[in-house]
Length: 106
Image (cartoon, rainbow, N blue to C red; front, side, top):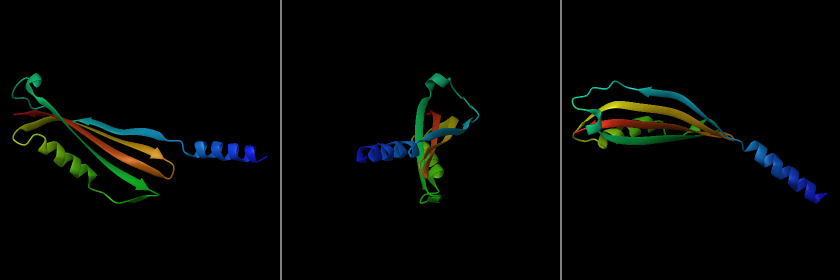
């Protein structure tokens, strides 16, 4: 009897811990090229926001990711910035993720 109770607890825990992933936006900005794209360097940045029961601590994760992308190309020009905004859901929490990729021309 005790064994059956533990099996039910484990099955319930696994069933409640399911997760999903969703891509909301995938956007690419204009390309302004002064030389061939093959001469550009690819730079990347990422930011995350964890939400627990609807409460968040950080709200400037997108600005931080964009600042990080710009600092990866300090003396150059960024073009063709690709933005991917997605969410990973867990039980009673989720994580918003922003991924930025661009082409740096020196």
